Every structure is written in C-alpha cells, then in structure tokens.
Length: 509
Ligand SMILES: [Zn+2]
Image (cartoon, rainbow, N blue to C red; front, side, top):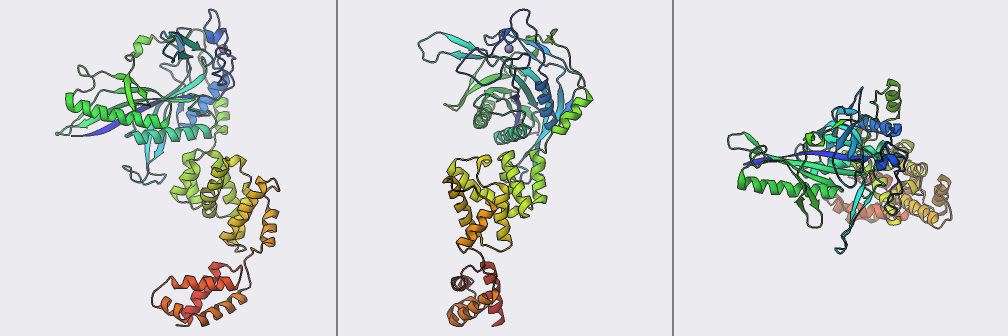
C-alpha cells in the first residue's frame, strides 16, 4: 500500500489598515495596554452600528487580484454565531455564501529533487484558491500561566481587526510544499503591501486540513479522516505539524483501516504543541449549520464600482512569480540566482534591478548581491534599504570591472574601503570616491599591452621547465607563469595576460 498526502490550507492575513474593519479604533499591535483600542462597536455594546472601512475592502480586493481571483459583483456580510469570551457580540462578522472573491491560484515553484520539480520557475505546483473573504478578528484570551491563579483575562484590542481569509483547494502534496506555498503567499502579500505578514504579531495564521489517499492493491483509493490543525503561527511549525499528522494518520490507518465518513471516521480538530512536536485534540469541529450564519442587518451589501476595480488594478505591481521569470531573460540569470534575489523581498529585487540596469551586466550584479553585499549586510546587521553603497555607486564599480579598468580583486578592495569610510562617517560612498581610491592606490589595470608583451617574452625565456610541463598536459603550470607576468607588470589584467600568454605558447609550438 502507498499513499498520497492531501493538504488544503486556510490562511488568515491581517490587512495593513490604520483602523479596524467596522469602527475607527486603531489596529496597532499593543499587547502591553489591553483594552485601550476599543469603542462601543468593537465591544459589541447594544445599539452600536458598524460601518465598513473602505480601505480594508480596497486592500482585500488587491489581495484577491494578486491571487488571480474573480471579484464578485455583489457581496454581503454575515454573522457567524458562537460563544467565546473573546467575542463580546456573540457573533463574528464574516462572509458566508457570497464572498467578495473566488477562484484564483498561486503557483509554487518546486525545487530540484521534489516530484515534478527542477527549480525552474515553470516547474510549479498550481494551488487553486477556492475563495478569499473578509472578516473581523476576535479578541485575545490571556490565561494565567503561573499555575496558581484561576483568572483568565480578555484583551479586545484585536477585536475587529480586518482579516482576509484565503481558502485553498486541497492541492498541496507534502509538508514541504505547504511551507513553500506559505512563503510564496507571504512574499506576494508583502510585495503588494497589503499586509506586513508579521507572524510573531499574529498578522498571518494558518489552519491546515490534512489527510491521506491510500492506494489499495486494486488501484482504488481510500481517504483517511481529515484532521484540521488550527492556528499555526510559523512556517516551520506548519511543516512540523503536517509531518507529524501524516505519520500519525498512516500509522492509525494501518491499524484500523477507517476511512473518512465511515463510522468513527469523522473530521478531527487539533492544535500543535511546538515544544513537544505533537498535536493535541481541540473541541470538536462545528459544522457550518451550527454557526447559524445569517446576513448582518446592520451592514449593506457591497457592489464594487468598475472605476474602483480599475483604480486598484493600476496599483498592482509585478508579482514575484512573474518577476522570477522575467529576470531569467532580462538579465540572463540562472533560476537559482533569480530565486535567491526575488525570495528576499521586493527591496532586494529592486536594488538588484537598479544595479543590473545601470551596469548592463545582470550576472555580475547577481554575484555581488548574493555574495559580497549579503556578507557585509549580515556582518553589519543592515537591511538593503540601509546599505550605504547605493545602486548607482555599485553599478559604477561593476562597470569599471567590465571595462577592464580594474580587476574583480581590486573592486573588492574598493568596495570594502567605501564601506569602512562610510562606517567611520568619513565619506558617503560615491562614484567619485571609487575613482579616487583606484587612483590613490594604483589599482587601475595597465592598458599598455606592450609592457605585458615584454614581460611575457621575458618569463617564457626563463621558464623552459614550466612550459614543458604545460605542453605535456599539466594545465596548472600556466598559472605560475601568469603569476610571474602579473608580478612584473603591476596592475595587468589577468584575463589579458592569460590570453596573450596562451597565444605565445601556442605560437612557440
Ligand atoms: Zn472600535
């Protein structure tokens, strides 16, 4: 027997608005001052009336467009009724049968080694998006963890924060794919600036529905009971929790053979304990009917104007998936380099693109960004936005390499000097600063090929043994000869020396 892993995700994303979705209270993350960002609306006091925050709807549409979803021409608000201390109204305002958007997809690039993957941006797992709807967040219960107290407290600062809930079809096939999907989603949402996706602050949370399709000897498939893992607040935990559940379900199926829907084969809801790496049972999942959804009589339905949709469309930027593909052809990057640059977020990709355009050499720009810049940023604990060498200056440095005015080694020396001067607040890195350093340190490449020819003739005359070694197949011997010429002509371009030396050796054959 073999099995296939079936995973669908529900992701709650906090939209980046200043105020809550149905009132004017602040959405700032403020756990140290509970219950200060509240008003009669989000406290659920009788008679208080909600009013839709248009910005939240706007950002919701932008999110849906990024997901390639259809925007519904008519959408309404529903009350999802349940009792919980962090929900003072006794219901959550959400969207039930007419969500504001539906039917989109996100493509997840599959890495080399994964089934169907080779790292190319065209080898993807397409994850269909069933729907994306808007709703308000609940408050937060805080339980006494000392073990002595019996009190629990409720903080309603969060209550009424705008969320978009994104529901995927069960198209993911492994814990690794689920993590990659979430990474791609987060990248896209931060590109679109609809959410900061700060998982520590709860701006992105995920529920995972997991089960197995077990292939029988006759080829038929048996689905195991679905388990919903609630409230995963890190990508790593999501991956761990799914792996744990897959192993559990396989073990359990081998023992019992119980299928989804059979007696004892009902859907279960669990939480994940990251300290123990295991899941634990939560309350039994309510069925939709239990919530008694009904249209909220205090809120009018929304019919988006075509002008609004057109305006939001003009705000859309190129999405990471499209950019990854474009970088391959526009800058001749490998899929690996393109992914490394794009996956670090929009600011890094923008920096790269500014340098690549200005110096005309994408490959060189990618090498510097992923090696030299990355290393220095890490050492200085700086983000690309604060990095003192700005794109035009780096581009000028790379241009001098390409024009054979300096060697890569010398360029590194200039790069490090510029950074040291910036750190000591001696000077701001500039193009003039590059040329001053090249001149003062004598780093310029000797363009006088006559001097190189003389040095080569001299070295060849003195190195009969090394030349014999080279000619008998020891390719390394040529390196020592290049070194001698470089020593004789300080500042010679190693590439030029190499070419001229090999030509000389070939003619003496
Ligand atoms: Zn409020």
